[in-house]
Image (cartoon, rainbow, N blue to C red):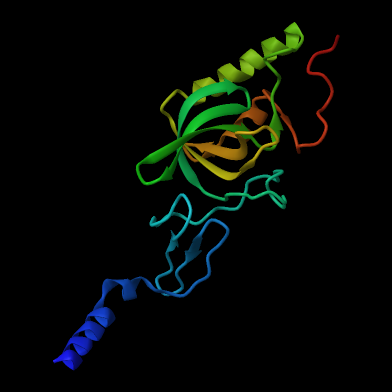
Length: 194
């Protein structure tokens, strides 16, 4: 009788749905991969675990996140705007696990907007205009996509690219003249002539 129990248990294990989950393919830095058998892109670890998502798209412009020694989370990740801080910083709630969000501050990579605080009056006016431009595109609750996240030099803030409605927000800010390209090195000359 014991032998039959072993045979039945073995058969159940072979027919178990867990066996169907096994498939070839190494994981990328985000814990995701392309399933060579089915062709889909999905995640086993990290914030997108258990989800079938679109594969990461190549970056639209060179950013400090590319080739960085710091950990970069390619994404893309869905997020909801909480508030616009200034012309290049936005607070968002990122979906980190199913039904769980985490509020983080995103500093848009690849650009530098005028500063609101501790700046000459002229620069503050430019900073207000930049913030108004971004706020017009990102009302609280707006869904955005963030990608190429990496820790910023300021604790709790992340450098990232952000898209709204499929359009890169950083590119729109640069084209509108509310920011300058910035590679993370020393900043360009003052925004306003003395």
